[in-house]
Image (cartoon, rainbow, N blue to C red; front, side, top):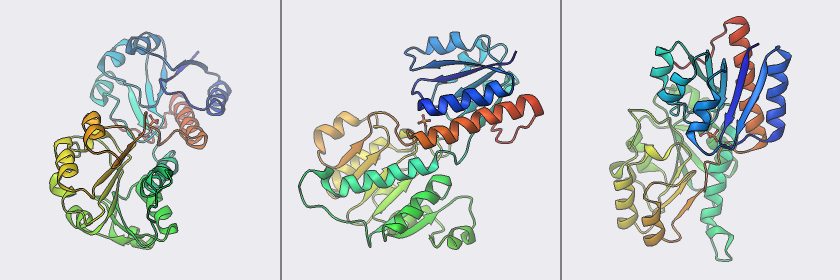
Length: 306
Ligand code: 3PG
């Protein structure tokens, strides 16, 4: 019997796990779970006899891939698959997939939520400001960016978007202002919401050169990965620009320095929280289970990333 492992250090809502179980069992497969585990070794042990694997941000490195002798497919229930060693997967004839778009609304709502929290001074009782009429930049216009733009528009913000891949027409058809290059996006927008994959091109790409272009009240919202920020440039920006704030779904490595020196100008989630809603868990989890069934039974490799 095909054995599917759901390995989630940060567990899905139980309603999503039930849905995943149903899809897997209806296909005649078996589901086993490894939730809230502590050590990477737990994952390495658990993959040894499974044929398919569903994960979130769990670290599927070469060690895991090589321990998983019977593994045919790993699906990252979410967007970013920087936590999978796709080279090792390919070498071991393992298909890797993600579930693009399935948790993007949840992430976008968190981006906007962090903005509201920040400009209202953490609901502390002090007077804050409003989003209406402010300029929001979308870096870049993927599934999350599109949702941040939609919600920002709803707040009455003036929204600009940059995309390295989407044509101007796609952005303009959504009623969003198109900007053709990143430098101009950062020069134009007080708020920048960054939702970009972490890869060789983007790691440390949000640097001082870009950030220092931002106008008065510069606020960067990062729902991508901490690695896309150049932290030396981030600290320089904090030190030089008293108006600069940084809101991030997961703290940077230089968190303690920011906490010590720049109080009141940041917000960091304690764990990656963007996709942590029942809806996003259901959407991404069920999509992952369905993709596994379709791949094993029908060879369907839509959403393959390696
Ligand atoms: C993603 O890449 O889909 C998001 O960062 C969510 O990650 P998570 O599933 O670990 O919450």
